[in-house]
Amino acid sequence: MNGSEMRSRLIYNKEEIRLLEECSLCPRECNVNRFEVAYGYCKTGPGFEVASVTVHRGEEPVISGPAGICNIFFTGCNMQCTYCQNHEISRPRVKDEYGDIGLDKLLDSVEEIVQTGIRAVGFVSPSHVVPQVKAIIRGLGRRGLHPITVYNTNGYDKQSVIRELDGLIDVYLPDFKYASPSISEKYSGTTDYPEIVIKAIKEMYWQMGSGLITDNNGQVERGLIIRHLVLPGFAEESKKVLRCIAEEISTGVNISLMSQYHPVHHCNLAAPLNRTLLMEEYNSVVEEMNMLGFRHGWTQEMDSHSVFLPDFNNKDPFGNI
Image 1: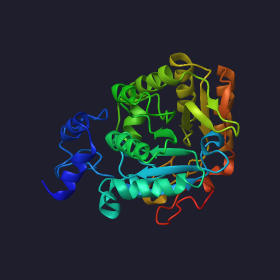
Image 2 (image 1 turned 180 degrees about the vertical axis):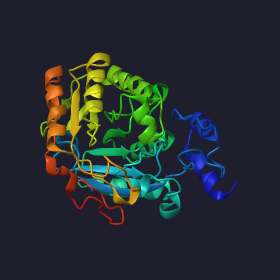
Image 3 (image 1 turned 90 degrees about the horizontal axis):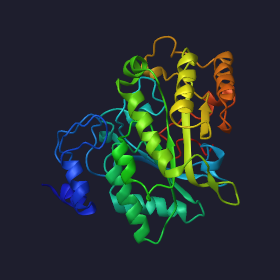
Image 4 (image 1 turned 30 degrees about the vertical axis):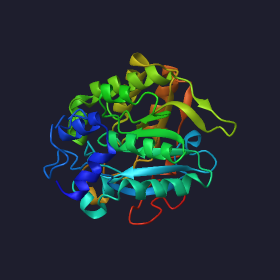
């Protein structure tokens, strides 16, 4: 065991070490020892492999609040969506470019931002690094910092892992990408995504309910917001997702219906994903959402695809949107 591995083990409790030694954190259940070289699907070790710790003002208004949120962007992912908007940091082996920054350095970066008055810390793409998320929350607590915690996930989470986050996470912000196994398999390599995401969000809903608790500035302090990105050519799939949420969860939940899809040219996408979303496609999904009786949430302007695309080569990937 090298020094880095030994330091990593000292950060976690016995159960977290066990999970990382035979990793079954996410639904892929690779069962690899992440303290060793042979990583699983996400190609992520036991450390703190982070691409960016930055102020982000481009989340939903209740998430960002008036000053923005401190987002921690983890590298790697337990999904590999062909059209990933964060492809610069989500692809396998990206850790070789960013590396393990260490818990203390990460906490220093978060503390510097939180001390400016920003109230919330977001964990972006955390499904494969839940022990790290817990360690960050514990570390901030030891420094006397207790920010609002936001679990910003692709939705491919095990229900049992979400259950263990009860009391640690204040706001769940999951994607609900697909309702059809064939489409989730084609574009994200996850035939079981629809059944997994429903179970995960049901657990989040059980913990949070459908309402949002907000402060005097309208920033959320506790709750659940379900995101769905409408893909070009797949308006009917989006409607199916909304129907699934209405039938399986509630029409009272907050929905963030996004139009910001941008074709990532580096990914060599085939039609229809090689274009932006059409207004008529998006509007038809909005109409379905209204018809189903969803009462709370957000829609986006059609020019959002040119606004929210990050560049992780910059210190501020979103240009202080």
